[in-house]
Every structure is written in C-alpha cells, then in structure tokens.
Amino acid sequence: MSKFAALLKKDWYLSRKQLLIPVWVVGGYYLLIMIAGLIAYLKFGADIEWSDFSRLEFPTVGILSYFSSMVMMGLPGLLALLVTLVLTQSALNDDVKRNAELFHRSQPVSVWQRTLAKFSLSIGGNWAILILISAFNFLLMTVLLSIFAQFNFWPALAGMVQGLIVYFKITLVLGSILFLASAVFRDKAFVITLAILAGVHSLFIILNFAFGWHLPLPLNYLYELLKFSSITSLEGDISTVEVRELIRENWGVIVFNWKTLLQIIFSGIMYAAATLIYKNKEIK
Picture 1 (cartoon, rainbow, N blue to C red):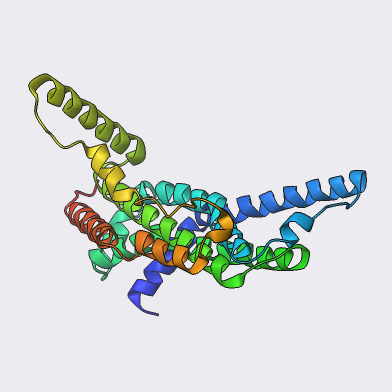
Picture 2 (cartoon, one colour):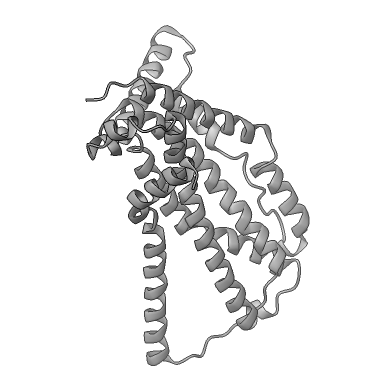
C-alpha cells in the first residue's frame, strides 16, 4: 500500500462517522416515507390516480424527468455540503486535538501528502458518498416512475449528473476556504472565518459610502464565484421545450465555462496556502 493510500485509509477511519451522516439521514427519510405510505395505504387504500402524468407526451416527460432527477439532489447535496464544512474546518487540527501531531510529523511522509489526503477525504470523500446516494435515488426513481407513470432515462441521467456537478463545485470552493481556515485557527474555524468576512465586508461598505471609495466587497466576490449564470429556465408552454437543447445549454452554464476553471484554480490556491501555513506552524 502506498503512503498516500495509507493516509487516506487513516483519515477515513477517523472521519467515517461524519462522512456517513448523509447516508443515515437519507435512509431515515426513506424509512419515514415507507411508514407514512403504509399508514396511508392501511387507512385510505391504494386508490392513487396516475392518469394525468401517464398521458403526458415527449418532450414533457423528458423535461419532468430531467428536473425531477435534479431536484432529488437537494437533500443529499445539502447534507454533503454541511458535512464537508464540518470536516474541512478542522481538517488540519484533528491530529493536534488527539495529541498525535508530533508523531505524524516525525513520520517519513511529505507534509503535502498529508494535507492532500485530508483535503481529498474531506471534500472528495463527500463526493463519493453523494454519488452513491444519488445513484440509489436515481435507481429508485427509475423503477417507480417506469412502473406507475412515464419516465425518460437520458434526460433524468443528465439532470442527476448536472446536479452532482453543481454540488461538487460548491463544496470544492467553500471546503477549500475552510481548509485554509483550519490551518490558521485551531477551533471554530467556520464561525471565525464567517465573522471576519462579514466584518471586512461591512467595514468596506461603510468606507465606500463615507469616502466614495470602491473597495472590493469580499462576500460579493465569493457570491460571484459560487453563483451560476442562471440555469436555463422554462419559458412558455412546457410542451414546446426541446429537451436536448435545454440540457446542452445547461452543460455550458454548469461545466464548460471559464468560471469552472477559476473555481479550480482558486481552490488549488487555498489548498497550497493552507499547506504552507500548516507546514510552518509551530507544534505545541
């Protein structure tokens, strides 16, 4: 086993409980739905009408399949984001809190490998969990809609993948910021970072207003880095929307643009800065 793989295994062992939180929450959510469905069935029977949806025609079915798949990313995506923030805000302090920092630093392993393993697991580990949950959701939606209504596979698959990428990019940017914060602050990195950004933002607003300056507002820049130039929306009659054209345009909005490259570069800079600070940090 390579050194980097061993580091990933070690960090997975230490962080697996937090990483699996989205799995347990989504599992509990489905359990509640099953219980509610069973109660409804026993009390009211199974007289559910699917006729309205079953009479829909393509491209309407394709549009609904596409957006339904993307919307199903909401809960697991939000959970993965929250877990990412929790893990990255303490990523470079866990060994210190466990009194194991000196031991790990004395090992013949590059600091860059250690930080890359922590960065990869804190962010990429959540990506892996999110992919597994999304694949399960997609399979379940495919089976249910194919049995009870209508379903178009390829638009739904595109919706799931595009929804995944949206959350990948958000967690990458925010996670890398908190990863840097974890190299600077020992405790409560998220709260301190948010307070500093909000304080600087407010101060710059006051200075700009008082002196007519044009100081850059940090939260505005962060918002611009994260936001998507509005995913193509539906206008007019849904039955006239061309599904393939809608998906193609949204690929350009979500992935194939300069902002994606900027987000990757920004996250790389945050990781490099965090590693340099951590490398030169005094061990106490």
